[in-house]
Every structure is written in C-alpha cells, then in structure tokens.
Image 1 (tube, one colour):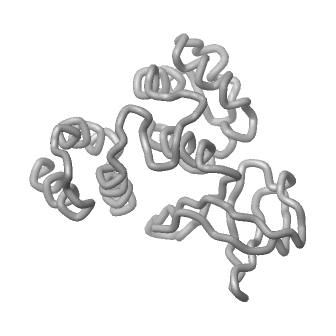
Image 2 (cartoon, rainbow, N blue to C red):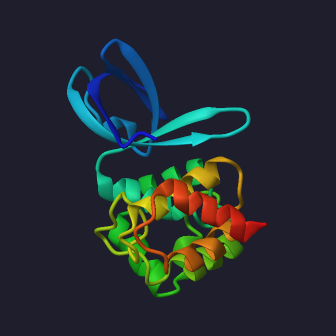
Length: 190
C-alpha cells in the first residue's frame, strides 16, 4: 500500500490529476482536482483500490481527508467514487455533525446516497468520526496494523460487513503485525 506520493502535477482534469513522480505519471482520482496547481510540487496522500477489473489510486490533500475517505468506504453502499463525491460536496465538519445527529435529510443530498445508505452511514459511523480523523484508520482505534490488515482483506474482496464483525473481535488483540491480524481474521471468518 502507498501512504503518499510526492511529485509535480502535470495534468488536471474534471475528475483526476496526473502526478509525475520521478518520470512516472500517476493518475489520481481526487475530490476536487482544481485545488491542485499545475507544474507545482505536491505531497498527495493516496489510497489504492484493487478490483477485478481495475487498479485505481485515490488522492487526498491531507491525512484527515484520507481518513474520512477510508471511513466512508467502510460503509456498505458507499464505494470510492461515492466517497469522493461526498468529500467534494461537503465541508467535513458538517458531514460529521450530520452523521452524529442522525440527519438523514442532510446525508441524502450527496450524489448516490439514498435514505437506506444514509441510515447505514449513521449506524456505522455515528460517534466514530471527528473533524481530525487520521489516515491510519478509525478514530476509535490507534491500531494501524489492524487497519492495514482490514484494508488488505477488503482489497481481496471480503465484504465490509464481514470485516466489521471480525475487526471488533480483533481490537481486543494488541501488538500483532498486520500479517498476524490477517491470519486471525481468516480463522474467524471460516
């Protein structure tokens, strides 16, 4: 997994930017491409999503935005593109307040978010977000190894609902490596 890339922006389009890093152009899907300046150096936090038909990189202006994205994609019904649209259309503090206050009407204003998905967002994220969400994962755990393990299993195709159940059980285990968490999670899912 990548944490961030540093390079020069060589292209800005309505949905993505291209970041040149040592002669390699990385296409990064971003929430607001026009917040990046052409021909300027940037450090962009990234998240890689691997699917059967595509390998995509998503870019973020800071670790907070990446952390919010990771929490949003953990919700059933919200994929990476929907999460980017939510981030682009919202001030993050307003989004957190809406989730914590069960404001379904506010949440359904986002593209691709219906009443059912909004209710799932409240159920999954209420009380777990704050305006300073960090990129290492959920606000309620400081265990970066567990977060990395859950992301890896998600990339392998395990469903978010399965992973949430296993993650709650594994939060009690401390001091394991990401590889050990993966092994324990696989045992629990059998």
